Image (cartoon, rainbow, N blue to C red; front, side, top):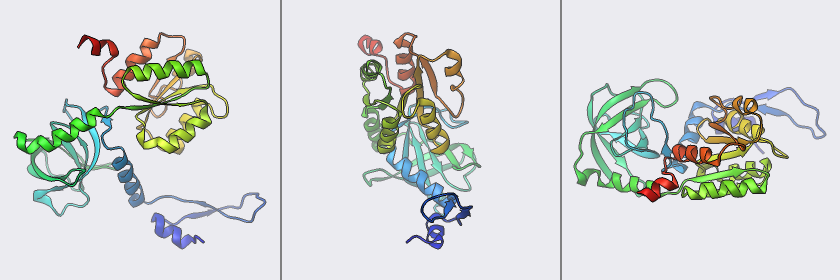
Length: 297
């Protein structure tokens, strides 16, 4: 039996008993607010599962042009080894972002000790190029200053492995012809595709394979659970603002455009438009070349 004391221990915050609701079985309801420590732990676990996903946009102030990948690597700033909870959360050929409290000053030169996924350790010379002091993830963006091939070779090998990974796209549409069409589009870009025939199947696929997905294409009008309701569950109930979600529908432009705003759809597309428009946006969003560009190369 779970007691309120057990819950408080598990989540780090006292749950609040809500007023009784009509029910055929005697019960009480709890409103549980997770502690910052639990939120940080869940964020860490999610990043560990999502290692190797491309990052689309750098944090404010980051000028690195090389592709960046989401990681969750243990790290230590050698000169400041007593800093609490140091992690690398994104990585590129030119630098990385190190989460830490009390971030070092700009232009500080330091050594960062990294633990790679297979347990290999290395120390890389770096310089602080930007700082984030507030929010859920304070830390520093650093640019590598030690560019010797023998030092950076393990990082380059890890990034090459990430670049070989195929993006995975979930397509949710109740019309078989459109599922087939979208599957061909996704596969033509070299991606893996998963299909769901309605919103309910899409929700199950999201729950089962959430950490493996890079992008979701949702039909707006579907039986059981429509695209808008599924999008609401992702954004508001699930709290995920990072997962890229495209709405694809024959609905009116006004209805679609009303959902294309921060915190809802990443993009909206009409089934009446050329499929090339969606193909080009998918390629841009996933940072992969169009089939015509691959043939030309």
